[in-house]
Image 1 (cartoon, one colour):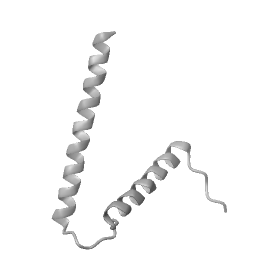
Image 2 (spheres, rainbow, N blue to C red):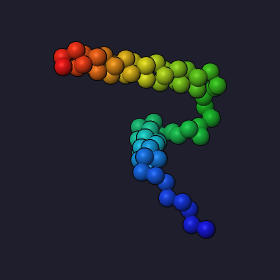
Image 3 (tube, rainbow, N blue to C red):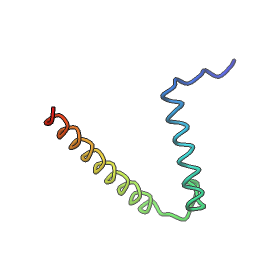
Length: 71
């Protein structure tokens, strides 16, 4: 049975994950299969990424709010 074609959004996200993984490997010469980090190290990385995410969301919301005020 042939594999079902993913919808365009899922395909786009998969491509972006693959590109990010390739970029990360090229930059750090490591991937997520690495074993040199502790669980706490992984949690620290995840926490830092989540903090960045909150900053980006806040910035975007502020842009939207300011744009709405100008209309």
